[in-house]
Image (cartoon, rainbow, N blue to C red; front, side, top):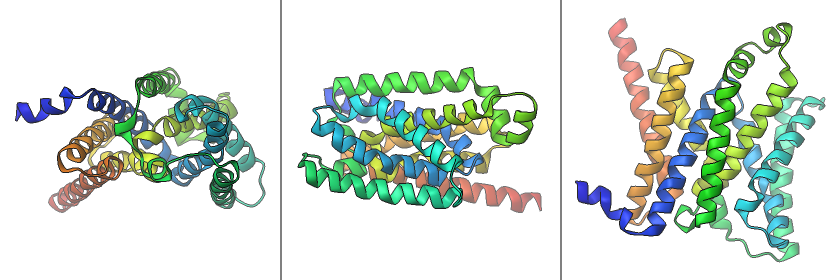
Amino acid sequence: MIEVLVEPFKYEFMIRSIITAVASGIMLSTLGPFAINRNMGFMADAMAHATLPIIAVGVFLGFSISELGVPASVLIAVFLGYIIKNSNVGEDTAIGIIFSSFFALGFVLISVLNVTINLEDLLFGQILAVSRFDVFIVVSMCVVVVGLMVVFFKQLLFYSFDPIGAEVKGLNTNFLNYLFLVVLSVAIVASLQTVGIILVLSMLLIPAAASKLVTNTFVFSIYVSIIFGTFSSVSGLYLSYFYNLPSGPTMSLVATGIFIICFFVNKLKKVKIQ
């Protein structure tokens, strides 16, 4: 058993991948409960897809996806927040328009600029190909994201559950809203190479949803979500290594398996109570 666990560490690319998987798992799982509580699943998906045109232009100018991470995420968060707040067509409609138009623009730019981007890796992730610089970026972003969430935890918690009450209490709700959008987009963009644009939403929401089923408090659900997300990332990576499976989809399926188990555990608890 120990030999099986240690074997991947013989290869440097697996060490880089595991570190990246853990960092991404912690980032996304920390933000997941907040995203679910604020019904921001569709928003998070739009953020992931909105990165495509920025990535296309950046690669054309000679930047890597990792180097584009922070500026792209901040730009996306501020733009989405502004459009949604000042739109009269409804939040879901505005997000849907941005989601589809940015994704379409990305594919057009890839064709027009003739940039070389492996779309399969971008859509579904290619964690086994991360470089040392990618690892540094993802770990740094993880520290920043978790650090900001710790510093502003009470304010964000209050705002997430009672935005009107937070405003009445004198909290700067605009700042808190944009702060969370920026932090969320940073986590999403930093995790693109891990699970890709399509699957990043699953790693953000599924561990958090599973933890919500088996915990009684919001704070405790965050800790359990981090455990589920990290376990899904690492175990999915192990499975992809030993069984030659695509890493991103495997991580997502492990998270789904955990959710299914938590779902039935929750059902059994309710049956026993009755």
